[in-house]
Structures are given as C-alpha cells and as structure tokens.
Length: 368
Length: 220
Image 1 (cartoon, chains in turn green, red):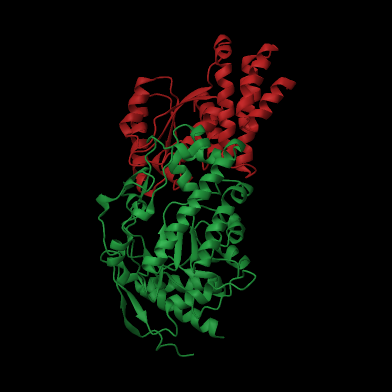
Image 2: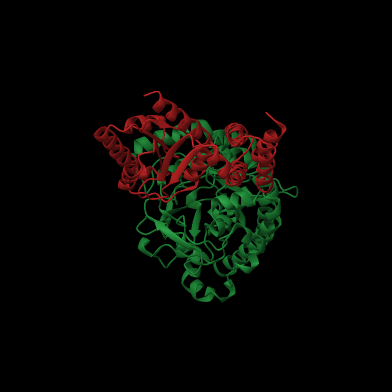
C-alpha cells in the first residue's frame, strides 16, 4: 500500500504555542477531526466502533484554553490567540481561589496555608453559604470568540477545550487535600459533596455549551488527578460512589453535544480504568508509571489510552533523528498491535517524525 | 488486650473520630493505664493502619481519618500521660525542601510518624536549608530530620539540605538521623546524597523512623 501521497505536506496549521512550529497539514483521506470521530463513534450499546483510518495523534488536535476563563490564567494554561507570559500566571480562579504559578513545575498550585473557602471542614455541610459559583454568562464570550473563532471554528483538527480543575481537584482547592479526601468517605459529608459535584457538573456542561457555540470545540480535556505515584488516592468503591456518577453525567451530556471526553489523571491508577469506562470516558490520558500494555489489551472498544514513545519534545531534551527512530520502532514493537486502542501523544504535535511513522504504521495496519 | 483497650484500638483503626474520646475516658475511668491505652490501643491501631495501607486494603482517606481519631484520643489522654510520666518515643522535624510547595506526602508522613508515638514538629513547605539546621540548634532533643520533595527540580535542594545537615552533624558530633522521601526520590538517590534512610510511602516512613531511633539508641 503506497501512502506516500497522503504524507505530502499541504501546508501547516498555525501554532498557538509561542514559537513552536505549526503542525503540518497532510493529504489525508479524511480530516484529522473526521478520523477522530471515526475512532470515537459509539454503537447503540455504547461500544467504541474503532473505525479510524489511522491512529489519532496529538497533532490531530488543537488545544484550546481561552483567556476569559479565569482558571486558565490561574493554572497557567492560556492557549489561544491572546497569549500571556508566565509571570502573569497564577491568581484567582473562577471561584476566587488563589493559585500560585510555580515555574519549576510548569503549573500552578494553591500554596499550603492559604485561607480556604471551606476553612472549617464542617463548612462543607453548608458549602452553599461559602462558595459562590461564577456567573459565566457575564463573561465576554462574544469578544473573545471574535479573535479566536477564525482559528478554531471550522478547524480540520479537533478543537479540544480544557477544563483544568475537575471534581476532586476542585474540592481540594476549596478545603485542602486532607479534608477533601476525608470528606469523600465521611458519611456526614457525602450528601454535601454530591450536591457540590452536581452543581460543578452543571457548570462544566455550561462551559461546554459556550465552547461549542463560540469555538466549535469537539473534545474536552477534563483534568482531575486521582492518584499518587504508587496507587489511587481512594478505594475503588469510593471513586465509584462519589465521582463516577457525576463524571458519567458530564460524559453523557458531552456526547449528546457532539463532544468526546479525555480524562487526564496523574498517578498510578490503571486499576480504576474500569470506572472510567463505566463513566463513558472516551480517552484516558495518564502517566508513564501505569501498565499501559495491560490496559490496552483489556480495553479495546471500551476506552482509548493516550500515550506514546518518549522521543523528546519541543519543551524537553531533543534526541537525534536516529535515536528518535529507534525509540519509535521499539515502542511500535510493543504497542503496535494495540494501536486501535491508543491515541498517540505527540507533545502538542511537536514531533513530525513520530507523526509520520505512527501514521504510516497504523494506516497500513487498519487498511488490512 | 482488655476489652476496653480493644474497643479503642478498633475505633482508631476504623477512624471513629467521634467515639474515641469517650472510649478513652471510659478506659481511664475503668483503671486502664494511660501508657497502655496509648501504646497498645492507639499506636497499635496505627501500626495496623500502616500495614493495611501498604497492602492496599485501605487508602489515603481511611489512613487520615484513623490518624484524626488517634489525635482525638490523645487529647483526652494527654493529662493522664503527663501524670504517668509518659514521653514521646522520639522527636522529629519534617519539612518540604526549599522551592517545593507540595505538602500532601509530607503531611501523611508526619501523621503516621506521630501515630507511631513520636513528637513531630512540622516546618511546613518551601523550607530553607538554614531553617532545618537552625531548628536543630535551638532544640537539642530533636533526633531525626525528615526531608520531602515532590519535584525532580527540587531534588538538588534536598541534597543541599542533606549536605548542610551532614556538615552540622560532623561539626558538632551530634547524633542525628536524616530521612528522605518523595515521588522522585529513590534509595539510590538517598545513598548518593548521604541520607540515612529512605521510604517510599507514609506507612513505611513510620517504620523507618522507629528503626532510625533504634539505631541511634544502639549508637549506630
């Protein structure tokens, strides 16, 4: 099968990542967005159809974190036409929680000791008195979309909006980690937690409505850290009882709005992937300490796993092209049989060799 | 173990924060010794909690709530412990090294070490190297320093702190143990920077602290 014409470069998508080069546009049989839809289309029973023509990659997606959402400034991820330099990151999120930009991390955190919205753990029981939800209808969506609409609307790639702070992380931001973790298993607090997560879900759905209306977004990257380096923070049943119902409502509503959901969670949490499947998450983006081979072997048609070979990135140390090629070949030798369950992470589309090799390998494999 | 002590142990293990204080009062009223309540029931319970955590039978919230239950019990027990001349088994300071704001792991470690019977002085996050040394100078009863780092970028700060503590130890001849931990830290790194011990989780850290104390007492 000769696919050389498909890898002819027709131009490049503009980059929103500072000085990073734009992602090449290839002469693919369908657009990257159409290919992602083929991968993530579900049948009437909810199974992922897996009809992609090639394995979707980071370069098939355009990340979108608009400046009008305070979380994106607070957490240090503004990715749109308006850019911010790092010294402007941090500050209040949409609940007025104060974040601090930590250059060494490349992200933000709430400094321990900062006054919490739920200062006393018992405040959670009546959180409605202490937490003011943002009125996002008052944000300047029209103004922001005037600058960004030309970039995102009608994109041939999937415009993926980020929701930076999910359920557990949001609860932590309100009452710090220890109180948040205990609240999830404290019978006296659980109703209040459910009420809070219900309302958060409503907020996140509303954000998705705006992202769809003003920017044509088709994916959401939902960020909620569920584990440590060694294991999940919580018991399997605690996730199931306290988090999954809300995440499922978010995912189901997102699907009805023509969105696909990527759950990003750090930590070694491979054992709770079945719960992501239960919540109808489409793609799990996790970390390297997980046994991804086991997960992809067990989850074809249930969920995709986002990862890829470590070939260096625009942000990190660079390997020579020969070293990169070796790494990619080694990775394909291990995971090549499971490319129908993988989204390949290409570091914001920054590695052309990786893109081409994965495209070629998966294109030929899926054409058989 | 008596029925009263067993009831306290079970309540702490299961994180029954609201009932532990009452059970301790009942046990004291029934003539149970304060030291036995602390050592056999409470510290015994936290030891079980640590094991269960290591074995993935319980997770962070269950460990936290058990530690809180113990704390409630110790509040009630404190006067009786003082009367009985009971002292913490050792004294330890803990902190996240300079440039690192992460405190979750450090707090869990502090809680489990406290649960093992130590007095723990928490210096917080982003602790300058000098602060560790100055605190040691101010308090000669401190035997162990525990350093935490979550970031690869703050591992050098952990080395700086360890260097300074080793220099202080050499200069003064003071008997002291330096323990390290955190996501990017390994036993090899601990050895490389001259720390005396490393543990990979909070439950193991409590065991490590007890071993470090035993080593100190044995003159090692």
